[in-house]
Image 1 (cartoon, helix red, strand yellow):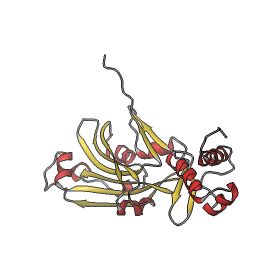
Image 2 (image 1 turned 60 degrees about the vertical axis):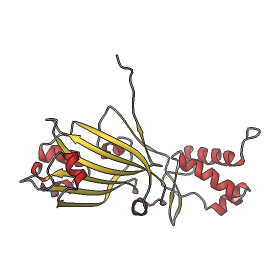
Image 3 (image 1 turned 180 degrees about the vertical axis):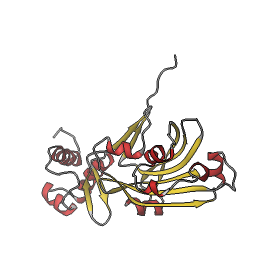
Image 4 (image 1 turned 90 degrees about the horizontal axis):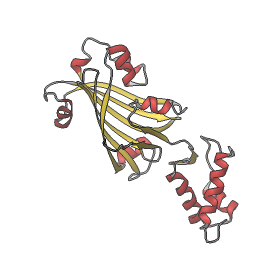
Length: 241
């Protein structure tokens, strides 16, 4: 231990090394705070500081009512490559699943209509999904697509495929080519926190996306809530020539 280094840092380093060495495996739960307190012979506050540090860096996830789970992989996505959320998860060797999906027809709100560049009396499909990574809730994704683009097609095909973009391309001849994402960092509402199994106020990435097809036509507007402790977004900036 480096002289002057906080006690919690030494504990954090020990737990981190045990995760990397496979002593604590992905998906397993750490010993309780009381057991860690006894093991390291430190106060409960010191243990909590060490655990919180590892949570912040994506090594651990706090699961309400169960404990602290090892989640050494943190999802990340980088531009300029455009991938669906399913692609982001699967390309990192992580199990992707949909916990809940609902597809319905509705009239758009003022904001949705403006984003899709349609009239308020033009119906849209609302596609609601609760997604998981390695069976851990990670994302709430609500997409809106004008009904006219899916008219005459069986929308239940979307439910059979985990990726909306894959279903659009393979079954509806709609290929998403570009997307504009407006990303904000916010605190989770009570509703979002309950679904994502986090605490109210915990960090969440809130994304508003407008997606364009192969003809540069707006076909989708979506609102996405992603757990901030399990996802990061990388943007590459280049000097203008």
